[in-house]
Length: 134
Image 1 (cartoon, rainbow, N blue to C red):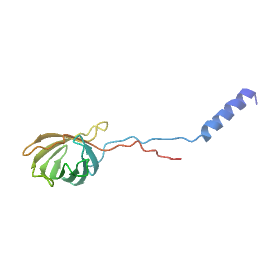
Image 2: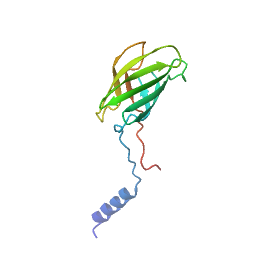
Image 3: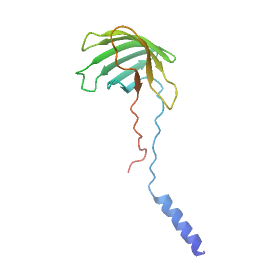
Image 4: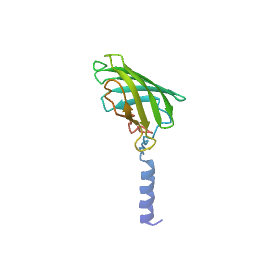
């Protein structure tokens, strides 16, 4: 076997033996269930069962600024419902638009009534997970 073939074969074996790190891509979730971040600095724990949607939202300072709850109904990409402060006296209605674009994910507030509600955009925390660690 010529020397160039031996070098090429050795290089191929070395490349195949080297560890490969693959990363998962963050994709849109099949439902709203899960942990979400909002642009008000809060963390939202959301549960969707069928069309029903609930959440508990807690400010980033462990609830010192706000804790709120929401109960609503999802109809395709639109969620309508009521929210209420658990810390404070605010409350009202919210209309949300779920973004089905896999690249964007999340949802945004399109309308609301009642007291001031700080959040207007939600996204899920996406960590580029290593599929085959170490």
